Amino acid sequence: MGLSSQAAQAFAVSVLDRHESELVAQALETVASRSPQDAVILQGLIAELRATSELLDRQRPLRRPTQLGGEARDEATLIDHLCSIDGLSGDLVLPLKATLSRTHLLTKINFLRGFVKATSALHDVPTAVKMTHELREEVAQSIYTLLAEELFLALLRKPDVSRRTKQRAADQLITVWDDAALEIDDFAPLLESAWHARNRINTAYGTLLGATETFRLVTEDCSPDVLEFFGREGMSADESAAFEEFLFNMTSEELATLRRAMQQQHVSAASPAWAAEVLGRQIEDLEHAKEIDPMALYRSSNRRQLAADFRLMSGAPGPRRTAEGYLMVYLLDQQ
Image 1 (cartoon, rainbow, N blue to C red):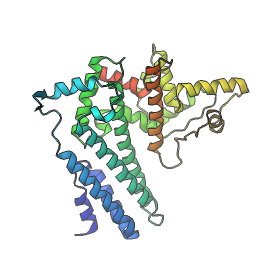
Image 2: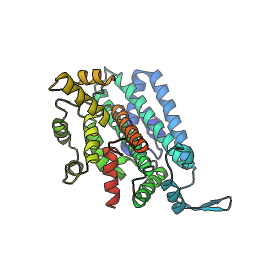
Image 3: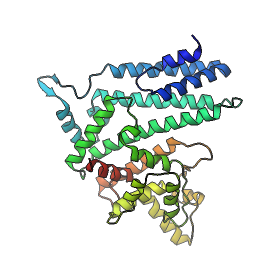
Image 4: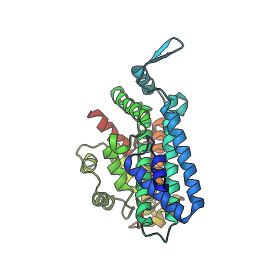
């Protein structure tokens, strides 16, 4: 049996779809022909992914009724439990399968990143560039899936989200945790569209109005439904501020700091270098000449989510959710 066939067979696990399996098999065969040592490491990642997949598969489906200590547990009790969490207990209050599902997804992300690293080094292989690009796209999709899961969890701990909306978010989480093969395009295609487009543009800053950034989202095929939602009449101040955060990859507090500095220093147009100096942190450029960096988008989302959570707990002014959070509540309410 040749290496390609062995690789394809090795990836016959539930988490990888046909395209992913064929792509990884091709990548492994190519790496093995140029760098056997790298191929050994990749085969180790295969074993780890398979092991986490098998462990996850052994878990009871979350919707299947059970009983422990005389207490009945079923889909309804789990949804009620998820709707009552405050977020302070973290994974300790989640079902074991939920934690294992997250671990499995993180294993898959690191597994794919390993393949990206190995194929990126194949400078003398004509097909390596295309292969690496496709692998990066798979990494991005898995990271978007992780972001969506964390977004649902964030909504569950928000006191200003209705019980009905939380029930729908909890129900969607159970579906995701029960099926490792699900990816973001299966349950939140609008979010994928927004993140896919945002991951391909940089921020011009300029006068901090956001017109250029919004136009660039359009050119990167962001779904019209997303743009219409954040451009509709009657949008709240917090929704507008959250979308502004999304456009500029910054918190509302950071944007306020920049605007004050522009006024005090008589700066008519902000640049990334100037903004980094004022804020005292590195400004991540999400635009790349050839490839995307979904890790940068993940850090951006976490920064904005932490800021939203802080405002909610402290009573500080500003949006209580991220832009994606406001959009997701709207989508859940339309179900």
